[in-house]
Length: 261
Length: 68
Image (cartoon, rainbow over all chains, first blue to last red; front, side, top):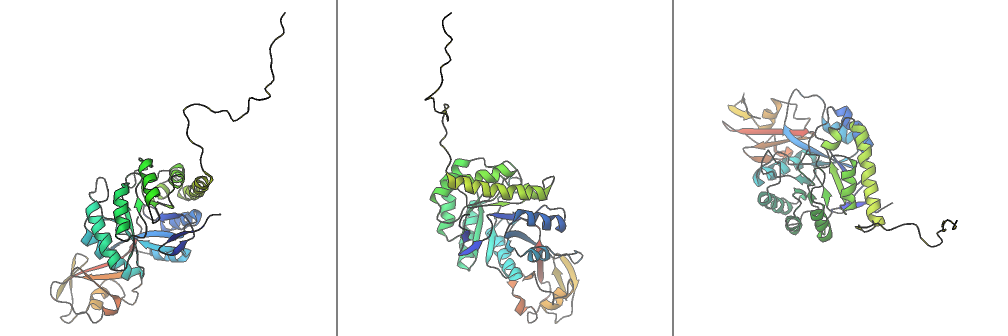
């Protein structure tokens, strides 16, 4: 159907990126991963637990998907940079989903630390995909420092509130010279479809799938909605109107006047 | 020599390397998916065995977990 999405010169086989947080087991993750059709999954870095059994890497490498490490949990540019460097060492990839969070209650990005970390990581040779707010100006600043994509939130992480400001996402898409990937807030399939209809190049989805009652079914639903949204965007929606516009012509309408008695 | 590995105190030989510290938690030959920082700096896998530790060294060993 459409051209594959290119990020930093690499073609992604799917426009759905799967976040792996929140799945109750590696088994469910593996099934959802397959149902999602994704080609790229995020992972986080945490302290080695000598008692832990089985690695998520086995699941992801078994499925043949690209690993996108993140810097989840970092509050400063310094911690995010160090975490990215650890990820590069652990997974032998320059790709990093950069998250620098302002506080635990909102999990909203800290714009100042984010731009600072993004600039340093680009200079260090990373392919940086920053999780950002839906601010088009901030997205432009991230693009200016060399980020390979921008990943705006639709609403806060894990909130399932969908896209709270679709106009900002539209403005971002209109101006962006790099792919725009809707990153957070998707609650169900229609949110993902809306993201694509607004012109986003891809959707990253974690909680909406992993915490759904049936994660495997939701993975398939969101896969289809991303495809549907992309098709609809390409097809071109009709303008919104206040008043009705008949789709059936009035010409040739029969006349049912009753004859005078 | 006492060092801190992932927040916990460990007793190692006086001439211990970073590889020895990693051995306290995992077979360092299974280095795939593992990364190490020593006193806030990443140490590439190829330099683990030549990196000597000093008293009180702080080591962070991280692996992939579900996230994002």
